[in-house]
Image 1: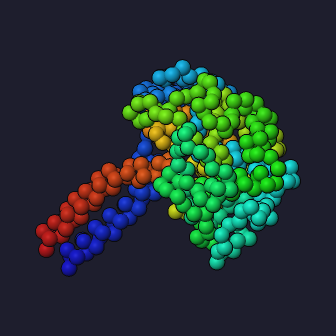
Image 2 (image 1 turned 180 degrees about the vertical axis):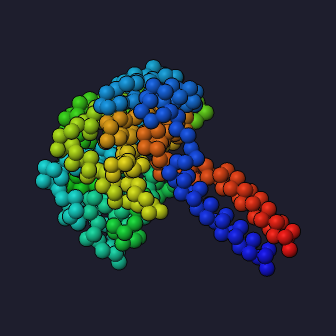
Image 3 (image 1 turned 45 degrees about the horizontal axis):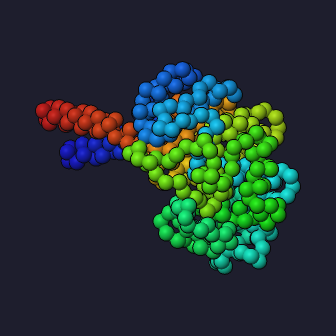
Length: 412
C-alpha cells in the first residue's frame, strides 16, 4: 500500500513539475538571450559572432534603435551588396499588401469588414459552400481566418514559363506542393489556417475597386509616399544591383518568378524596408491607427494570438502591444524578416539569399532579446528547452520519494 502511494505521488509530482517547466519554456525561462535587454552593442556583437558565418550567399541586416539606424551590415556576401540591393522578400510581401489595403480603407474606398462578395465580379467568384459566404471579409482574408483551406505557398516558376493571369491563378493556383483549390473548408472567423489564396483574392479585389493593376496601386499608395524607391514586383533578373540567389550550401541558383505579387512577389532593398519601418514608428494618430489595425489579434494557435491583419504577432509586450512584422521564405534558400517593437521604436530587418532560415533565426533572437518571450515561430525550440529541467526534476523527485519510502520501511 505504501508503495502504491509513493507511485501515485511520483506521477502527480512529475506531471505538476512538467507543467511548470513547459509553462516556463513558453515564457523563456530555460533560454538565454544573446545580450542583456537594452544592450544593443552586445546584441549586435553576438549576432556577428554567432550567425554571420552561416551566410552562404548574400546577406543584409539593419538594426534600428529608438527610431534611428544603428547598424547596416552587408557582409559576408558573395556579390556586392548595399542598401539599394534588391532582394526577393517572399511572404513578407503580405505585410505590405495589408498596409495597402488599410490605406484603401482609410480613403473610404473599401470596408475591411464588409463581405468580399461586394467587391468581386462575374469574372471570378468563390465556389459555393455550405458555410456562410457573407462572413468572409478582407480582414479575414488578410489574417488567414477566412475559412480557406488551401495552405497555399506559391511554386517557383522559371523565367521560361509563361505566367498565368490573375483569373487563371484564382481558378487553378499553382502551389509549391502541386495544384490546390480555393474553397471554404470551415466557418469563417472561427479559426486560423494559412492561406496564400486569400491574398490572390485580395489582389483581385484591389484591382476591381481601384481599376488599376495591383502593382500600380501599391506604387501609388505605398511605395512612392514612403520613398521606397526600388520596391517593385517585376522579375528580378530584369534589374541591376540584385542579390543573386544561392542554395543552403552556397551553390548559385536560378532566378524565379512568382504568380502572386500580393502574397510573395515583392522585391525590396534594406533602404526600402527601413523607410517602411521608420514610417510605422511615427507618433501621429494615423500611424498609431495603422499599427493598431495591423496588430489587432485575429488568428490564434493553441490559444495564443499569432496573426493580425497581414502582420505576424511574434510576442506580446508588457503594455499589451506586440512585436509585429512578417517573415518570408522561398526555395532554394531565400529568407527575410522584418520585425518592429512599437513600444520602444526598435526594429530589425534581415534579408538573405543563401543560408536557410538564417534571417528568421537572427530575428527570433532579436524578438527574445526585446520581449523576453520566445516568438511563436520558435515554439518547438522553446518546448525542447524544458526537457532538461523536466528530466532533472524527475530524478530529484524519484530520489526524494525513494528516500522517504526507505525511511518509512526502516521505521516499521
